[in-house]
Every structure is written in C-alpha cells, then in structure tokens.
Image (cartoon, rainbow, N blue to C red; front, side, top):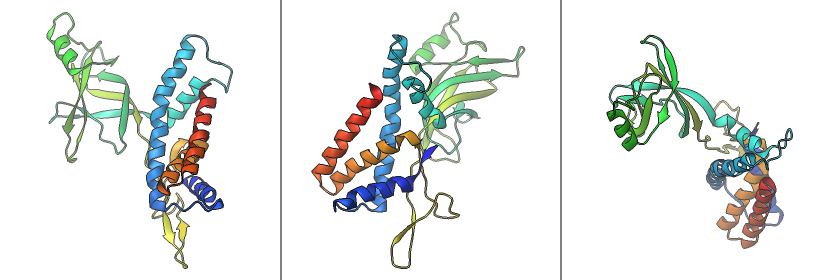
Length: 257
C-alpha cells in the first residue's frame, strides 16, 4: 500500500503551523517529497546488505513478521518487474523501451528459439574489458547455454537521449531482465478555489491528478520526519532541523537494531 501524498503534506503543514513556524508551498513540498523518497529508496540497498550479513551469521530474527531482511525486500517488490528488452539493430543490442526509469539490473535471461534444442539461459553480466577477453578465447567463448553480456549506452529512435543497451553473445532471439525501477516522482497537485485557496486534486482526478508516494505505507513516518528536516532549512528554523534529525536518527536505530 502506497503512502497518500495529501496525508503527508497536511501533516507537515499542521506541524509547521502549530508552532507558527512557517509555511511550505506546494512547489517546495513537491521538490522535498521527490528528494526524500529517493533518499529512502536508495537506502534500501545498503540497509539490505547490512541485514543480509545478519542472516549469514544466523543473527537475524526469523520469526514471522519480524524478519527485517524480508521486510526490507518486501519494500522493493513494487519496484521489481521482469521486462522484455527489444533488440535494436542500430546499436546491435537490446534496449528497454518502457516509460519507467531503470535503477538496477537483476537476473538476465537469454532465450534461443531458432536453434535446436531451444534454451533459456541465465546470462552472465561482465565488464566490457572482461567481455572482450572472454569472447576472444576458444575455451571460454559464450554459448547458448552460457551466454555473456555487457552494458553500454546508445540512442534508440525515436528517443534523442542515451539509454542502457545490453549486448549479448551469442545473440538471443529474446531477452528478459529482472529490473528494479526508480520510484515515480510524487506530486501534490491542486486547483484554485473561489477564495484563491489551494484545493487538493485527488490522485483519481480526471485531469491534474496528484501522484502518491510509491513507498510502502510503513515509510509514512520517515517521509514526514525527513521532509520536516528540509522544511526547517528552507524556513531557517534550526529547532525543526534538530528535532526532525534526532527523530529520524532514532527511527533508523530502532529499525536496524
């Protein structure tokens, strides 16, 4: 379940206004919301590594609903998806042509249907240097059962910006990649009311619809606290920065202890 952006914004405004600390505009809030969501999202990966070390040493609690490594993995599920990459003859490689932003590549599967027998093989990802050395050797040359790939950049029409290209040897008939995508930027949108006030435009609105945070509902408190931290910087109130920073630190300690 995602975090409702209106709930976060109204809570932030309530906390700021309760002590007459100031006001944060929708444009300022949206910028902070994108920044904080990205910080929390990117922290999942080093946090996951840290928790996985506890798993490896049998120090992790494996009780149902209390395994922190599984909880961290669960938070990434909305951003994980198997995607078919499309072959681009101009770049001699496979490209993702969807609208989302790629963040990480997971398991890569090359499928060969034009040969006998048909095979679907896990593809090893290597650096360009290692790829060149391995493919040159007769002993280590990639095969349909053990394909090899590397990543580079290229422009795929009709796009005009560079994007990720996966080059595979031998060339498969299709390529599927388990990907992690970056979260969509949240946005609190509004319509102007009869008195000139901002009226929240729901995420279900036909036009000018708001965009909720894509993070799990358990991150709502972290979002509010960290946005407040940046709000304190904007309105130059060190007390807010200090209080929010201390609370964020305490939440992080509780989550990792």
